[in-house]
Image 1 (cartoon, helix red, strand yellow):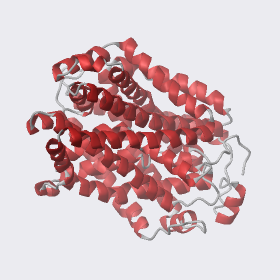
Image 2 (image 1 turned 180 degrees about the vertical axis):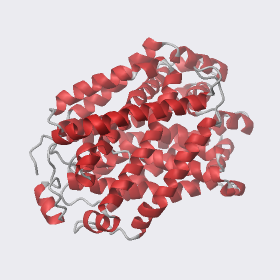
Image 3 (image 1 turned 120 degrees about the horizontal axis):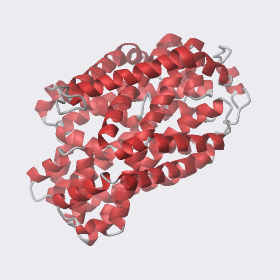
Image 4 (image 1 turned 90 degrees about the vertical axis):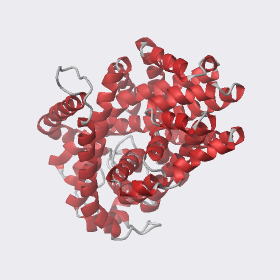
Length: 512
């Protein structure tokens, strides 16, 4: 293997799986999944969500794990070696999009830290109805210095963990993920002691299929979107952590464990949130109002008011809930930092130097999102959609390599605990492209429905957002393809497959 500083490996499969689950689990598991499930037919949504775990998420995770393990490089070097020098820009895109998401995600993580403090300090107890929690939220979000302060805490915590390399990331996730799951389990059980009948209503909204939703295309599209975003499949996370896989580590089974682990956390969070909402709401209609109020509205307004109305019990459960949210956000931010750092280390940077500069860049670039919620929403659409395109790039690289050759030579190696069958090839070649078209088309269609006022008079906000997306994508793609592609391709170190040798025995010997 070429010389390089990024040669650490995970000490165990447990460390790897907890870390990849940590990268996948984020605030979306806690505030988006319950809302999407309840609003789209409960069990009907869950059927689609489970199907797409195996028809989108796990197949892409398998591809990413294989790419990262074989190339032993971050997304930039991996795409160069897998697709060819002229396609290095694919990896630069994946690096940029993941980092751009981190710019505003650090702000969201700052929100969760702030609300953990609101809960544990007792400040929440003074706001026991939605009007008061609405005011509390608006006062916070309209205070730029306060939002930036907590954003900087989020960036600092993430950078601190990544600063110490894979060993530090592994140790952190071995603590954070069990704690996160424990906190969510407590939050899941507690409502059934407070109001069993109300909590059961929440369970019904989550698990019982509403048959009519099975025949609505939107139910299936939203289930696919939730599965795609929730597992971080195709986003470069699995490539990044697979770089540190041990020599004899399996690919297929680890991908299944990551996907199933992520979905298990989502289920626990879904029960925790919906049972709490309906257990503490005065009526089913009030509970539905909370669920339908959007991610931030559900979390920072309605749930906060419900926790506040519980007195001492609310102080305990609210603190646990927002600490769990903070941990979920932190593990995702850590993966964002690590994905960026690995690429810079591949280009010759010292890890600690790279972490310092990246942390500074993320902190500064996140300020516009901290100052303006409208700007954050715009960037969330622009680069959230960009993440889906990253997934398409992974699939295209696999197809360019040869789907059958990829499965036989890079996935089903002699170290495979779980042999992956031809079903994987059919999904990558035929099913995934159709899924991508459906998701991307739905994003555009849904955004065009937003006719609220935009900065340009006479233009709906949805159309304005799409135009900003096209412009930003066009600018960075021109820069990446025509100005950076060759320069970056030359600067990234050689990995074990840089010479085009994909023989498993040779690669494994060189990668140790």
